[in-house]
Amino acid sequence: MARILITSALPYINGVKHLGNLAGSMLPADVYARFKRAQGHEVLYICATDEHGTPAELAAAAAGQDVFTYCEEQHAIQHRIGRGFGLSWDWFGRSSSPQNRELTQHFAEVLEDNGFIEERTDRMIYSIEDKRFLPDRYVEGTCPHCGYRPARGDQCDNCGRLLDPTDLIDPYSTISKSTNLEVRETRHLYLLQTKLEPQIRQWVDSKTEWPSLARSIAYKHLDEGLIDRGITRDLAWGVPVTRGGQPRTGFEDKVFYVWFDAPIEYIAATREWAEATGGNWESWWRTDKGAGHVRYVEFMGKDNVAFHTVSFPATIIGSGEPWKLVDTLKAFNWLNWYGEKFSTSQKRGVFMDTALELQPADNWRWYLTANCPEGSDSAFTWEQFQSAVNRDLADVLGNFVNRILKFNETRFDGVVPAGGEPGALERKLEADLSAALADLTAQLEAMELRKSAQALRGIWVLGNEYLTEAAPWTAIKTDPARAAAIVRTGLNLVALFARISAPFIPFASEKIADAVGEPYPGDWPSANAAKELGRLEPGRPVRAPEVLFRKLEDSQIEAWKAEFAGVS
Ligand SMILES: [Zn+2]
Image (tube, rainbow, N blue to C red; front, side, top):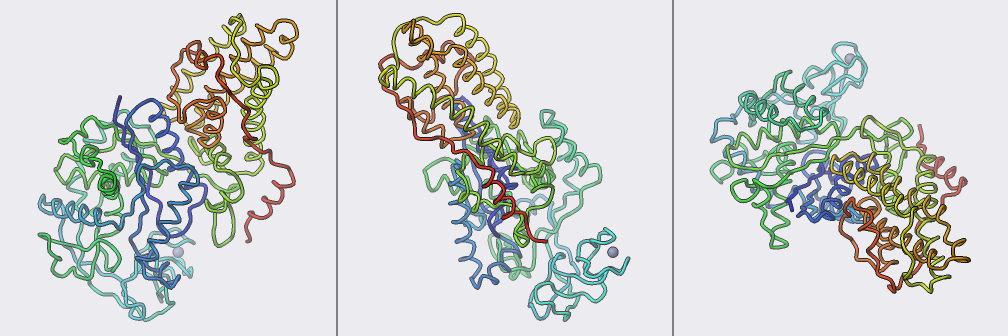
């Protein structure tokens, strides 16, 4: 038994997330966590909302709330929706927690003690009307290169050149539209990533087992040369800046930048979990206190890879303290909506709250796992969604479970029948099934989500093919013992399907397990199919479940296509 720490990238607090956010980190992390728990490992799956920064402040103001209340409400909403999708977080924390404040301040202090932080003077745009310094993306104006307006403070969308907001001609605040701006000097803390580069490179060199996508992104950033990064901002909402445990002189109105404190929340959320449950957070994170034997797996979108392979490790490595670093990363590309971006303002695409109102969580989970943006970007289409629900779930899995249990009720009084011996068909099934189970397990071990879903579907198909060929409804007329052996095999397949489907479609799997009197969640099966199919003892009462999956009509699909296509 191993100890496995799993984190998925932290969703930002501002607004309900779309299906791509779910498919590209939280859902695959959940599938993997459920699989590992079923194998009997000790798993801790941690996630949290990322709550600090200017967007949260502005969203709160727009909602007429103070930022603390706003974040509290939004966190509760994201928590509820995540649970609705069956995300089996052991803890869903908040980066605004006292635990994160303490740890963030701790890391900054030790980094400075070790010579990796220094104060520098920046020149930044200050908006007199907004009474705040403006982050780059909140300043717009005319591009000095091509004359395009409005060009953003960080980049011109027309000519593509990277900009500094002080380059813009006739700049204005995107918050208030005010042009009453001035350049002011302001002091900030910088994390000296240039000094840490050799240590980070040495560490990445040692990570030969990382997927090539993660390694290549890490090396790209290292080869381009790391830059020193400002880790404080002139803001009110965030972790206060300290030195020697006291407010840092000259930094009373500043906080740590959200990118500095957000990943530390992985650790802090574990501490939140420990304080709520009596767990031991240090045994997951401190290699001198038991975390040396922990395997740490991170799930994220591809835009977050540099952050997790270079930036956050710079904080950890620079501390000089024995904190756990990531062992394996799993990164995803983008899921888009018919080739376009999801957009709240343009009403394009389905967001997580609406998704649960339209369809059961398992339908989304199955579609999004089987079609996740793994090797490349992928596009959501309603046609594929309909096919995943109707063909895979309803026709293959649902139909199998229903068919065998209904037949058993009619012919064997709803109990697992005794009598009969396995024959040639069962031996062939066992051989095929053993190979398929080994494949499914191997794909999940490798975190190959699409291939895992294919392997699982292949096993459901094996069950259907077996039942069609064995035809107990024919055998019952001439050889009741033979029919009993077939039905017993079929019922054992049902029990097996509940166990292996649970990481993907937990809600339906629980109903299936319940139908055959099996515990849920069950343990993960071996690749010895003969043994796994001998699980249900004759005489055990079983019953057909309620309808597991409802098919989607073409008319419904057409209506949804129109409703969520977006306005342009
Ligand atoms: Zn331009």
